[in-house]
Length: 106
Ligand SMILES: Cc1cc2nc3c(=O)[nH]c(=O)nc-3n(C[C@H](O)[C@H](O)[C@H](O)COP(=O)(O)OP(=O)(O)OC[C@H]3O[C@@H](n4cnc5c(N)ncnc54)[C@H](O)[C@@H]3O)c2cc1C
Image (cartoon, rainbow, N blue to C red):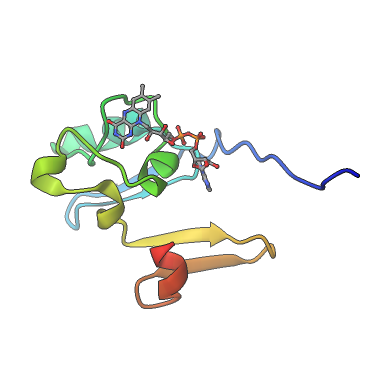
């Protein structure tokens, strides 16, 4: 018996918007660290990028994200402010520590 599943390629969702004053970046689901660095470097900023800039920001961060800068700045996951998530029921949820704290933790 077959299982229904869906594979979604997020590679074109690689937008990065940087707020250099707040030191925040909004990163698309398919962005790689090289996309982030290209947008933050003009401001003299970076993220807590890992050892390879071709790695995806979301996958890296969902796994914790241990950067060469980690001794000074900690895990990338600990710097996430909020997430826009599509849950399996098809709903888009804006998740942060105040709204939906369990999902934010997960
Ligand atoms: C050369 C190299 C160097 C590395 N160096 C480091 C390092 O220095 N520090 C470190 O911590 N890790 C490092 N890693 C590990 C890296 O963080 C993991 O391999 C990470 O999972 C890569 O994420 P990805 O999105 O590129 O991979 P993927 O396999 O695409 O994604 C990883 C996981 O995240 C999920 N995922 C990805 N995008 C989304 C999304 N938009 N929404 C929901 N789920 C999503 C996928 O389903 C999958 O389970 C390195 C990996 C490589 C290959």
